[in-house]
Length: 342
Image (cartoon, rainbow, N blue to C red):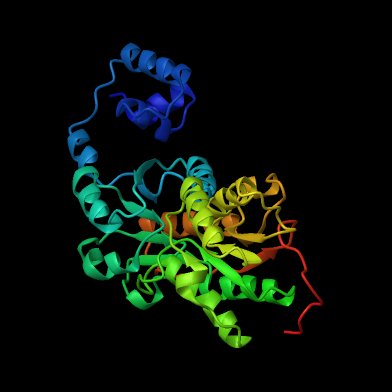
């Protein structure tokens, strides 16, 4: 009797590719699909009696991505998918709204699709605290630290958001800025959210250097998108034209901020300096080039990919690791007086 291994051998394609064709998955080239289907017909291949059971077995990795405008996640996703393709591992990407409960979505996806592992690109630790215990398959959370959640099946790889924003704020202070605004996230949220920890990093720098910070005057919340960054920065700069620098909590926010400053007749960095967070590729091409916190997307993607593949196939323990960041000094921040000693 012809087996799936025979079909793979005869066709010259891998067993994984043959399996995807037999299960009518879309991620196969038309040429490969046509050749494999022809061989299946030619050899009268009939799936064995366990085929239905095989379909019910966990398969593939589900990737839940929060936010449709997140270029950082898009970069990480591309690197993860490249690694998965090389390992002939199937992936399914599900896009969620920035404010959606990703754990509730994951519980539903596990029931419906039965993946063997889950990758969360972004996540609110509050949702994990509330209901992640309903998920028993291996999972990885990227860009948020799950260390204190103590779930045996949940790994995490992230940047120290508080330390990174403190470093960026101190960088601006070092260049002589004292009147600094902050744009992005929600200052009234909890420490389970990334934006809250970034804001706290900025405030820690102000406190360290005895620089007063008036949240009502110097802070403007917004979602992580260019349009929201534009609108929030316009409101902030109109409210307080004396600000010499604006720290945006995400690069997409910062790109919107650059345009807002321009439309208000302000030059960057001559009239107001602007910084970002993430280090996405686009920041190399803005005018001026954006000074930003660069997250190591290559390390985040590689460690995540290795972790999820190891734990879905073998008995590896979960891990929680902080990945180093860098301050990318470019053109969007100027020195306004003699540098301060830190």
